[in-house]
Image 1 (cartoon, one colour):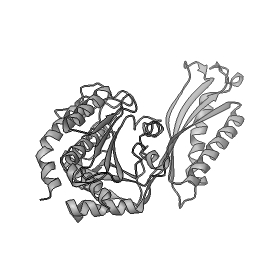
Image 2 (cartoon, rainbow, N blue to C red):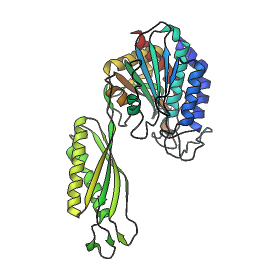
Image 3 (cartoon, one colour):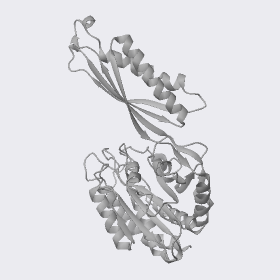
Image 4 (tube, rainbow, N blue to C red):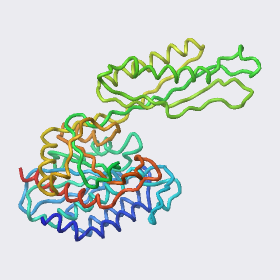
Length: 396
């Protein structure tokens, strides 16, 4: 057994305890006060060389190798929870009503702490620097990555490459298998905040009003044609109206209606086309109903581009450390979005982002579901694999 796997086995029970502590005390984006304090304590205990706090709830650790200066590799984990009621039934369930780690960020945080602990233990075996980035608010736009980049997290020392991983449920109950993909891996995401301004009136005299709800209803239907009729079928995008509200009373024709739509796209062309079409449709539907439709675009997360050479390095490192059965190449990208993309995009830094299988077979539910349960053994592969990736990158 390798030194990495031996050490991970030794600290595994400790990692389980940390993960369960974080899981039981979840905090939503930019409110991760307890979580960030826990991270700082753990980094101090393991002997991290430098600990920084570039944002109120962000933590960055710097570990310098014992063999002297060299390259700098960054490893990132997100630390925030979701405003979701937990229904998992686990004994360490969330103690905060309406908030839970339904996206696995408790595991991400713990795996990065485990990787930091492992590399601290092995610091005399490598040259260079490892930067451990614990990012707040990934699941709440505008996210934490852009703010961290603006705060200089990719400098001092300059980051030469950055890696991240995300747990995901698996139908076949595989645990700890790294999912790899070269090129654009996660979608871009943007929000449309749409306000329909009509004219209210008595419900018995609709001809004297301009019904904002009727207008909004037609608009929702018309927006379904953006992807089906305006996006190249060889490209891909998803446009979903997620929330809609309007009206004050049953006997009043509504003068105002509001909705929020989310766009996920896999190319700049699809994104630009969809944005143009949403604005065009809103203008036309508004004119037809005598309403003014206001559209505000909230730019979300960029496409994540996985550098081919970095994915090759991940495959080599994980295969050497864990075996070929712990690696799989995907035949298509992941439809979700991640602000990890900004660490590479905004700084022109080679990056790679991977998914890692975390169970639970026939009992599997999707991410962001309050019933989700992960197999904690995923942390063995997550820690050992990312430790091996960091060491291999610094050695080349």
